[in-house]
Amino acid sequence: MNAPRLARARVLHSQSRYQQAIGELSLHLTEMPDDVEAHCLKALCLGELEQYEEATEHAQQAVAAAPDASYPHYVFSVVMTGRNRLDPASSAIEEAVRLDPQVPVYFAHQSFIALRQRKWIAALEAAEQALALDPEHESASNLRSMALVKLNRTDQAAEQIETALRRDPDNAWTHANRGWAYLETREIDKALEHFREALRLDPSLEYARQGMIQALMARHLFYRLFLRYLLWMAKLPSQVQWGVIIGLFLVYNYSRKLADAAPALAPWVFVFQIAYILFAWFTWVAQPMFQLSLRFHRFGRYALSRDERIAANLFAVCVLTAIGLFAAALTIGPIDMILGSLYALTLVMPLSAVFRCDQGQPRLIMAGYTLLLVAAASGAFMAVFSDAWWIAWGQQLSRIYMLGILASGFVANGLMQWTPKK
Image (cartoon, rainbow, N blue to C red; front, side, top):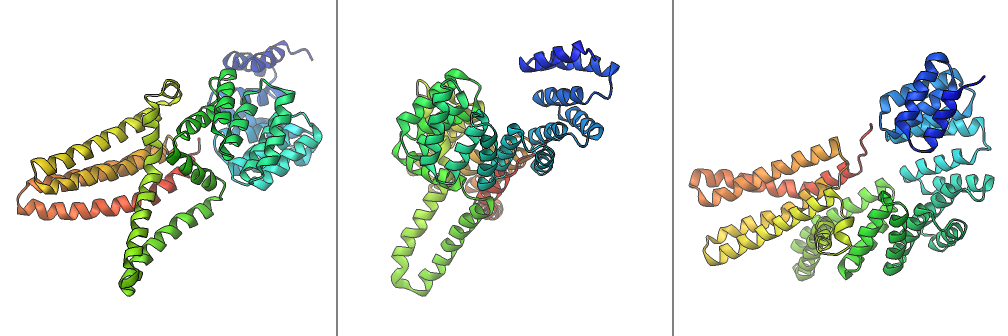
């Protein structure tokens, strides 16, 4: 049957002209409301425009109309992935693979979902199945290299990427992957070269922009050491990450009891405690601190996102406030103003976490938590200049603030691992 509107919609979709494609598909569906391909294509176009509710409806209609066809299940999986609903997305792509195990793009999408779920081995296996069907499948090649990096098989990842680059030297994703692989091996200049090329080929590629930021900051020795910790943590499952964080905190708490029980070890315990506190503080302030340095870098200032610029500015405000209060305490007094300096320095931790949480509920909750800490710190600081009645309240607020700061790392880590569904 001749379907010129559907044909035009296919072309418009391939040109990323999604709104025009939707117009053609809507007209086509008024004449042929049960056309499975049209529902699938409209779902994909709507998903690209982040109109997820309507996209889901069309994907579900396609599945209902052709439950034994693999493609509608694949489209439904793509829409669910865009909505960050990875469990139904995974189930749908498994069904698509079961119905037709000879389509490489299905396995590539399965690999992508597994990477999102931090299932590195599953991601590698799915990518390799895609490449077995199509050895030149670029997405599968990049996904395989990403999985190999996460599994610490960097030599194999480098070989995979080099093969892909020889086949298609103008693929932005492949250059970005090469840059991240070089970051793993601490070859910063080579990483920068590939991130620049990726951004030249696709200036909107967020994966490359983030890599460029990390590589520029990694030129500083302290951040380079910190980046090794970040990359190591990023490879761990969420449960193991929590184990590391909670384990270090428990060791820190136990060290206080150890110092009381064995006074001879007290100096060493004190050194460990200071090192832990500095490390915990640095894990939160490192990124905004070095992002601030990029504000003055001729390339880095253009690579920073709006959120990163705000986080860097807030870091600067906190540090300058801390320095100002400390200087005032030493010169004009009262000496208790040093407490305000401590508040300003520690507020950097929750403030920086706000912009590392995904937009939506995670960021709003972290912002609200931070505002409560700011209120507690402000009240405690003002008590320094008040009468005895308010001083007592200020002491309570100070305790609440310090407990809130201690808990802020756990709150922030939980919210940062929360990907809001759309």
